[in-house]
Length: 431
Image (cartoon, rainbow, N blue to C red; front, side):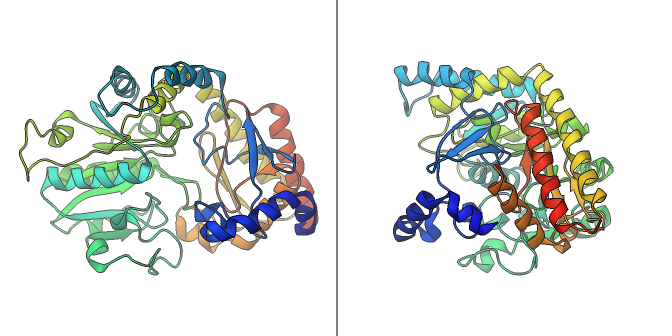
């Protein structure tokens, strides 16, 4: 299959050789590299990517999950065109940031106030700082497999083995106040939360990089209870799940509310974005008119609330507000998980299909996948091979990562995923 890939992507191969000379690994984000080299996209529209060799791919990576309406939806394109004529960056306050903040507060159950950033990493960084400022405590509990961006204090325990640092350059001082716990294991969290100085527990309601594994509702309820009992803030990282599982995100879907919520991806309508929201009394700690230094929590940035991003995000959120699109996508996601499982099982291949709503992933294992340890114990090489085979057949997943469905995906797109999966299952099957 690699030979087929190479034969179809000769222009990408040549561009990769150029890219390696000016970009480390030839890419701008390490996860975008895959063997033998990544293809280079020329354009995207709807559910499709088109590479520089002219190949078409049905896209289930869909911009890291950011494009819930598909690539370049008309509602976003028109909003951005209007705003470009009026300015791309002001460096001053403007109405669009107020309108988008009002929309977030309207849709998200726990949100009373909002601040915008330029990425999920930034939003997580500022959310952690805010939690520490509000509680006066220092330690943070995060979960194995949880990915919260590149912020030093949260950049541990992402990949197995979890004790190995995720990057060079992380100092002991930056990570010593972060405590790792096992996802979907309340007893483990309970034991580690006994430490008096825990400011916050941060959790992805659905582990993304950790395997597209949903939190069990009772686990989230347990986290909520222990936070209430011990004066700890509960932070949901909804960079992936925000505005996807329900109009109000995972907190609406599961019915368990956090104190602070972190957003990204969908909120920006395809443009760089991050945000964090919470109860008024917590968010007011960001207000230098109320709290003087050193008692307020700083947040800022040149491009925070960029008007292009605000216009695009507002267009997307208003489109999703009534829940109709999300409900349809959730049903499609359930069908995808069930059918992928059936296809592999029919060929005698042990597989677990995880996810919730319009998110899904495949794990080649007979063991139930409840946390990141389970996900990394599955056959990751087989997963990468499966995804490369899909790419050759015109179905794009970033190898070993989760898939998501957009409003642009058609029944025919879904059927092509099933057919390509069946072709692969026949190759590796035991039946």
